[in-house]
Length: 218
Ligand SMILES: N[C@@H](CCC(=O)N[C@@H](CS)C(=O)NCC(=O)O)C(=O)O
Image (cartoon, rainbow, N blue to C red; front, top):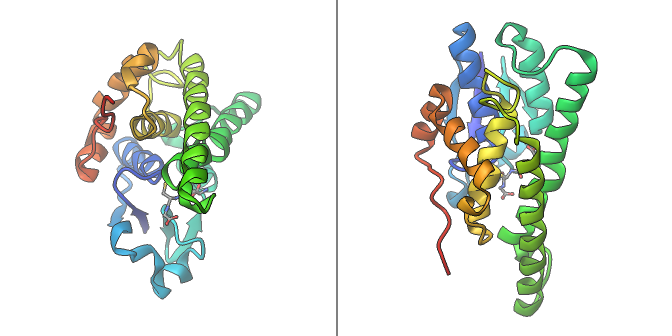
C-alpha cells in the first residue's frame, strides 16, 4: 500500500507524477493525501512523527514513512523497474541521480531563499537583499536546466515521463514567483508545454489544481 503526502505546487509534485506514471505503466495504485501547508497540517505531532522535518513529500509504504525526494525516487524506480523511470545502465543511472540530486539540493534551496527570505535574514532590508541575490542566481540555474533539456525528445530521458520532467516543471513554475518569465527561457518553456500535455502529468496538474501561471509582469 502506497500513500503520498503532498501539497499543491510543492516539490511533492515530483513523486506525485512518478506515482501516477507508475500507475499508468503497471496498474499499481497509490493514495494521494493532501497536506494543507497554510493550515500547518505539516506541523502537527502526528505529521512530525512521520517526518520530523515537517515537510512534504512523505511516501508511506505499508505503514513505513520514507522522506527526501531523491530517496523516494530511487525507491520507486527500484521497486517498479518495469515502469522504466530511470536509465538502467550504471553510468547513465548515476548521471540521472546526479542531476536529480542537483535539482533537489541546489536549484530547490536557491528558490527557498527567494520564497522564504525571512528564514535567512532578520531585517526587511537584509531579506530584500537575500531575495534579490537568490532570484538572480535562480535564473542562472534555470538556464542550466534549459541547457540540459536542449535535446529532450520529447522528455528529459526520451519517450517516458519521469521525475526529472516533474522537477523541471516545478522549478520553472516557481520561477514565476522569483520574477522569471517562463517565456524568457523559450526552449525550456516549449519543453514544459510538452511535459504538461503528457497524460500522467496532466492528471496530477488537475488533482493539484495548478498550472504554469505564477509569473506576473512588473
Ligand atoms: N529535501 C527535501 C525538501 C522538501 C521541501 O523543501 N518541502 C517543502 C515544500 S517544496 C515543504 O514541505 N515546506 C514546508 C515547510 O518547510 O514549512 C525533500 O527532498 O523532500
